Every structure is written in structure tokens, then in C-alpha cells.
Length: 197
Image (cartoon, rainbow, N blue to C red; front, side, top):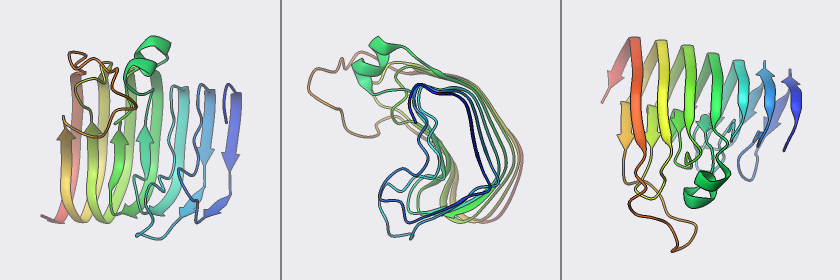
């Protein structure tokens, strides 16, 4: 979905997507609720829900099991995202359950337009590689700020919280290596973990 407003995706099951499953781009007022997303753990790039340069997004009461990030918040890639300058903001995630070979909730790595005001609560991630991950790289620019994650339960997760500052490729050689991302005001609280490596 692109350039859309007042989007509701509810009470559906998505199976075996060949790539990112639900990908709202340049959208406002998006609600994804009571959705199940399933893809084999060996399937690459099968993200569940990827709000991209979108605002006022609510994701709630979803079960996701995929071969890549359950949710990945994005806002454009390197200079293209910087010049377009549309952030992802006011993202609410609640009552998410799932497992993945990648991350439960990721921000980036394409976050050059900025990501802010992300609130996630009542998250249950199990049998997964990472629970929370912020992925950036020199050349991305942009920012990730005002992220608040609370009441998270993790079971059999290799890495609970992970920040990666040298992640991913660039769309071309024209990127500015001095465009450094700004990361600030990240809060993670009330986390219970069992068998966290």
C-alpha cells in the first residue's frame, strides 16, 4: 500500500509471502489487528509488518512466525530517504506474539528519513534470534529517537537487545559516509527473560 490514509487490515491470515508481507509506504492512520503471518523459518526477507515512512500506525493482537523480522520500522534508504524526508512516527505495537530467526521488533536498517515516537508493550517473543534490534550504518543519516518498549517476555532468545551500527548494504556508491545516524532516548523496561543466551 502506498500513499494511503485510513487503512484497516484485520482478521486475516497471510501465508508464505515471497518478501515483506505487509508493507505500508507513505501511509497515515494504519491499523493492523488480529492478523496471523506465517512463513517458513528458512525463508529469507519474509518480514511480517514493515511500516515505512508512515505515521499513526497501530499494530495489535498479532501472531507472526517468519524467516525475518516480525516487525521492522523503516523510513527510506541512505540519500534517498534523507532527501525525501518522510519519517515513520507515532507507531504503536501491542500484544504481539511471535518467533523468528531474526528480530522480533526491528528499526532499520533503512531509517534515513527518521523514526520516532515508537511505543511497544505486552510483547512475547520466543524461540528467536533477537528480540529488539536497531540497525543503522554510516551513510544512513536520519535518527531513531523516543522509543519506549515495556512489558516484554522473552523465552529461548539468543540476544535480548541488539544495536548494530554497521549493518547492511547501500543502494549505490553515491552515499555520504559522513551521514551518521542519531540514536537517542531509547527506553526498554519491565523485561522478563528465560534462557536468554
